[in-house]
Length: 234
Ligand code: 5RP
Image: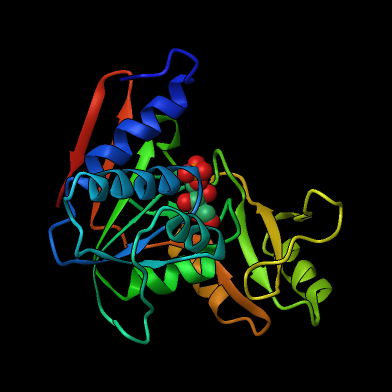
């Protein structure tokens, strides 16, 4: 039943999460993304387990936060050490373009999210319709995870590539630290003409350990909005 206090965006995220979990088959090893939509995926999976369904599904979390949530709900977890290849990953995104290229990392989990996505046979991205964008960078900066060592040099490099930089802060005003202990530089490039070219520049730079451009990784998309829920497959 829907909660009357639930906002439209949260309702769309929940509907998308519920549809996405329908793709999980018994016995699968499933990557569990990070962020509020992924949390709804984990909650849905836990609810189905409570009904005696998908009880043999094992999750591989992409962040400490997701790990803690899954544990608290009794969802069995594993690691990429035990399962270097995953059947399916369900994850959210901040921005999705028509070619299903993504900006991710709004929650700071981009490094582990990308590792898990690259280790997965299928990557199903789960979003509300507000995440759809004609061109990446229109709505969201590109998060870039950098080692604290030399971070100001990375900020200069990123500015030279055309970005306006904000070092992400935690609630306490101290620099936000990723699960790896690194900083995030949020890079406002504006609409990005050639995401592949930008990704290559970022990947060539020592000190940049991950960036939030996810290209060629999405195999399917579930999107929910005022028009209903749609599952786009290749
Ligand atoms: C976290 C992510 C999230 O998937 C992204 O920020 C979307 O979050 P939400 O589902 O809360 O809107 O990439 O690093």
